Length: 278
Image (cartoon, rainbow, N blue to C red):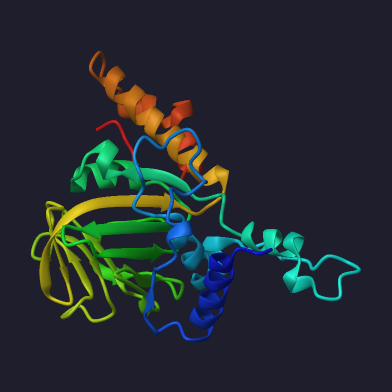
């Protein structure tokens, strides 16, 4: 017999898909466990729980979830009640999501966020937890970049995960990340109205405001939703940065040496042609 808690969850997901602006209580304790897409690297419970990941996979655009079609078993007159079909539906949880930054492990700060998140060229989910227990998810369809202007495609979105699940806003030009441009606010912001963003994180990644209500930033997780190539290329760039920094301690490369250097081609493939030896 099918677990009634699972059926209750599926019913709520169907309601959520039809009414994305309606708040949904996460009261499915059987699902509140660590996500299965980080085997062997779970020294502490992640902020993104199993129930949150399933709800997000149902609500997010296919760009993030990459859903697989569930086929009803042949010869079954009532496929929806079969365990095989139910298992196929539940297998749609995105196993390709990979944790690329965890402030509890890597340190909380803007420099740590930039170091672990930049150069990842796939879509990402930034899960933010406040000191009061609220949890939000920032869906970014492209590589994170610094700019004094708001950016982002149609697939950009902001969800509240706790205390209630719901879509707060989605659409283009609602993402903002700036730590270098003078005369403009520093930090991370989310919202289509620059004068009143839904989420505002200060430049030190210590304070957060939700609808102008102040709180303390507790934890940030960044989940990569792209293919393995996106993660591999990011790791290649990070390894090169470490190797290059170590080498520059010994000898300074001239401009002419850099033009013909094989590492330059590697960085251009990874989309980082701005790196130089100066």
